[in-house]
Image (cartoon, rainbow, N blue to C red; front, side, top):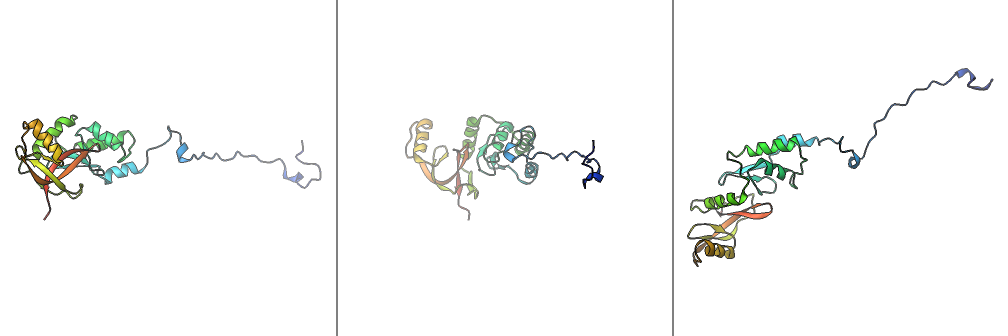
Length: 200
């Protein structure tokens, strides 16, 4: 069958040559990328190398988050959970596991999942008469507090200290002194109060 009528100007061109159109990869908006093809963001590995997530507060041998300054249980699972929380919002996977193990290795102590028992040990250390530290610049500023004259435990609130006197010291009264204190938090709540002095 002729391609054009006789005498048509396209008659000499012959039949058309057909080529398949190049295949274009479909572009998805970032919110619509299928979950099975979505890759980890490229900054994750870079951030692992350049930004320390946790550090050790040596006077108490505790791990704290560099961003929110909360104490974290000395357990790699708890550390990994914190990495996936609002501070860093990392996705579960090898990157989180590696960072958690690196942070856990900062502290050469056994895993400690029992924060209540750990708190008792920390307060025993904070009660020592020689445990009056220079004010920690990156924590909330020091405030006026109180400490027990019988055992040395510091508290921010006098009502809480009176409760301590009632429970631990059989209701002894007026056996307290004033001091400057700072507080570590854990999971957003006050966890450990310790005595400080102003930096000279």
